[in-house]
Length: 284
Ligand code: LER
Ligand code: MN
Image (cartoon, rainbow, N blue to C red; front, side):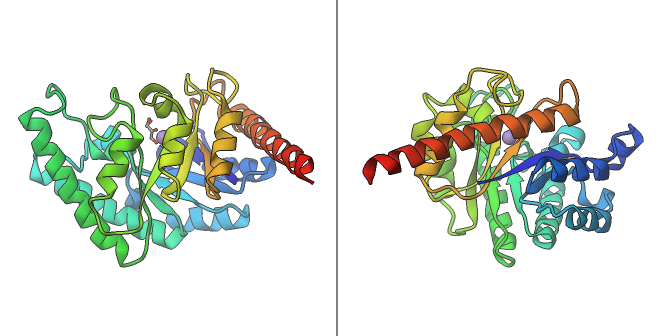
């Protein structure tokens, strides 16, 4: 398992004095293998510069987060307003093109939208869910042309109206033919929605393309009450070989959080390896 950390490489960040290229160098020096990019609109950023900086730092780009398109612009794949939904689809097509270029996957998280004031199962909720299904169908069609992975993330009920649990996502993706439609598990959301961590990991075996690690309070592992050593063991048991990415609250700051995330996550993975070799020694 390799580690990555989320960076928002936007001009806004640079304007705020947050230089993303410096963050790339820092991640590399801390031992990260990848950088996960959170991007609202691929057209608003300098992709050449990002590609060059990532290559220079020896970082892969395992995944691209797309939630900013919903947070900042209200673009939603489940919108009943066709103009908004078409814009969201066009944006996701741009993200798929970007992911193909950077050899990463596209995350389908908050961009699936939220139905305010309509309870789950209500007519408006159902209509929106149908729109979401139609949107994913179209995106699968487009992504399959370049074999780009689309990773659907179960997100807790307070942030989105659809696909809150791992079971929801597994049954949803089983409705599509595209084998590149996968699952992204985020420990923060699992802590809210799941009865335990081991069962969803086991059920999603073979379908997990990416993982977000964040503690129960969305801080780096060790700051809350999630048992990451246990999760590391569960992931190892199912043969997960993808990335574990830090998507956490950046308090007190990016540098310290990236450092602590690396140290604490590595410790969880290491203790799992030690445990494993102890079992091995017992066997021989
Ligand atoms: C997106 O990956 C996510 O986990 C959401 O909670 C957005 O903050
Ligand atoms: Mn997440």
